[in-house]
Amino acid sequence: MPLAPTATVLEIDTPHGPARAHMTRVRGAAGALVVGHGAGGGVTARDLVAAAEAARAEKLSVALIEQPYRVAGRRSPAPAPQLDAAWIAVVAHLKAKTLRGVPIVCGGRSSGARVACRTSADTGAVGVLCLAFPCTRRAAPGRRDRTSSTA
Image 1: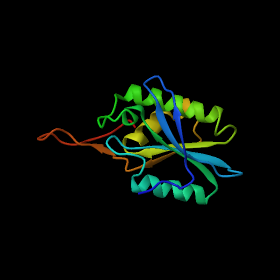
Image 2: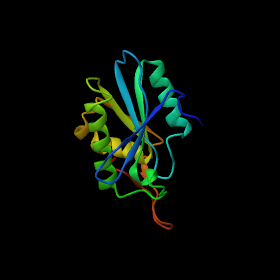
Image 3: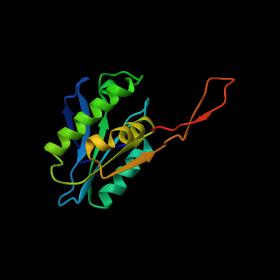
């Protein structure tokens, strides 16, 4: 699924390598949506693209973020502390430059949603959008699923 035709791709340094932001700015935006991908997917996932389109229709700028492990070509996600540190660095960069002065809603799909939840206080997000966010974790075969108490 294609991204917005007017998206600008920014490479942003993080403590764990460069991340990539597919940025679509909306003139006179009242805010911005910054979302990340799931563990094994990318920013072209249908639900992320749909959320981005809906946000732009509501006059929000949008940044679809690729974590450093994906930019480096790896499919397996980095450990949570690395994902979180990279995310915080990306949002701080965007807030200081491209999205200066506008409220930001952070979010993502699955793993990206977990990152957005864990870091919402550190990023100053005014809200969190969670897509494909599992409420339970699958246990190993033969063990019961357990309800996830943390994001």
